[in-house]
Image (cartoon, rainbow, N blue to C red; front, side):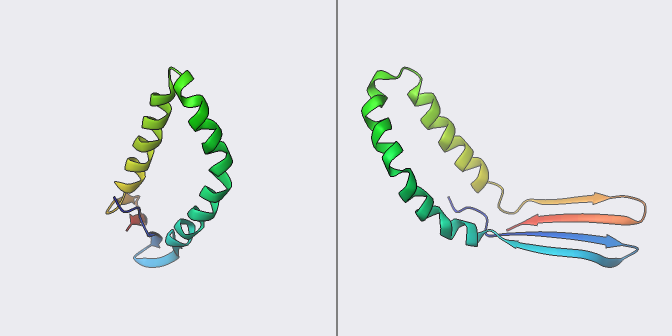
Length: 92
């Protein structure tokens, strides 16, 4: 699954755009390999301790569930409408 690349936040007031903020998430995904390199020592320790942990499968599966949840956010569009203000959040 592919994680989202952009989040757009737009606030309209009386039909005019008051605030617009694009957040490029793909820049965060570019930092992910460096974070994984920092986590390698912890992963090695976890591999040796894993057979002795009873609940380790729950932790590993919860990481996968969170990743699937993040990836499933692609295409989400939230529109909040008030009397004179609209807030739109799009995740691509």
